[in-house]
Amino acid sequence: MSYVEEVVAALDAVADTRVVWEKGLMNAGGPHRRLASSISPISIGEDECGLFGRLIEELEPKTCFIVGNAFGFSSAYIAKAMMDHGGERIITLDAQSEGDGERCAQIARALTKKLELDILTNKKGWSPDDLATAVESENYDLIFIDGCHGHPAVSKDFDGLQPYARPDTVFVWHDFWFPGVRHSVNEAVAKGFLCHWVPTSCEMVLGCQDEAMFARLQKAFPEGDADPESHFSLPRYAINWWLKSMSVYLRVFAERVTGASPTRQLPRASGDS
Image 1 (cartoon, helix red, strand yellow):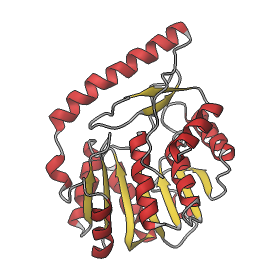
Image 2 (spheres, helix red, strand yellow):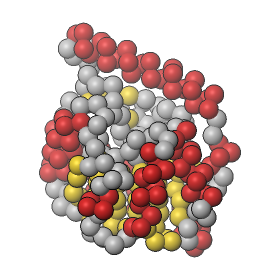
Image 3 (cartoon, rainbow, N blue to C red):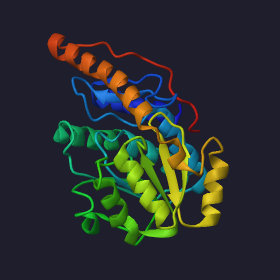
């Protein structure tokens, strides 16, 4: 059983979920998941879990810090993969402000327990205000930014995490199609970061300051591009988001009216080891 299959099975055991964006949002990929009768939050795609699987297999990070956790799908996957590749500690920080935050946090805790992810600790707090009390390491090998996507929130997350990063620390931004995420990536480039765009379902960007590490990222993800800005297309993003978000709204409306909706079972992504 792949990591994705294990995490999805555990999630379905502790929560009622629905599949959305079966073929991806901005690019081919997905599927994604949400909680039943909830519009948001929506998880990263299973293809994006595969990206983390490849990244963790390549880098074997010991430590990871994650901003934004929702119901814990991405952090559970990252922890599962890291545990098999020498990982020692993962911290998530989430304000529990999106959707039913407390319900999401309960599910994240249950998922962590179900999968016996001893290296993973989920904390409640705001980034960057609570970073100093949330971190448990002097610096981190891997940092995933997936909290509030508006500007300047993403930039504040990135700036707040700088004291806990080394030149070879790898940052991962999710949802590059959001203008706030794009702004943060462009600021990182202006500060000397090397950034690599990868065409996942919601578009992800990997970045670091160390040239040798960046060369490893480029080699690991040859489908990507070292010029993220050249791929940003607000009209295309807006059209895709409007069309595909409407399907989510309609499904949630139907669930709330009828009180039930079938969960579509799909083949799981296999590119994660």
